[in-house]
Length: 80
Image (cartoon, rainbow, N blue to C red; front, side, top):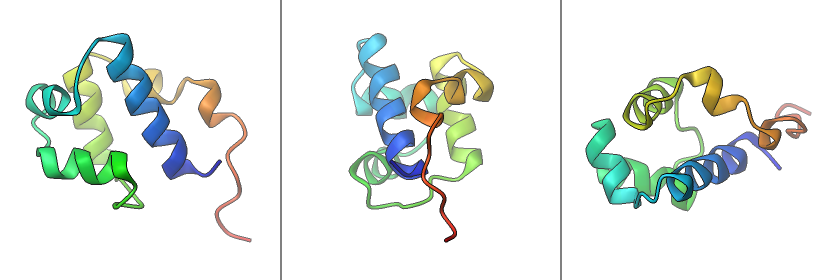
């Protein structure tokens, strides 16, 4: 799994835990729905840390909490 795939899965996981739709996440985080949709659909390869921070703020978690998941344990090396 690469970092983008892990970010997508983590966003989906957090939304499911909180019973949130992507639209609801967009509303509470201040990130446009099109941006969140692009991230989750894989259209945007690099979400950017500022965007992830806004999503975390909307979810009421820290960036550390976001990345504190087994999903990020065995990420494929990006540069080979």
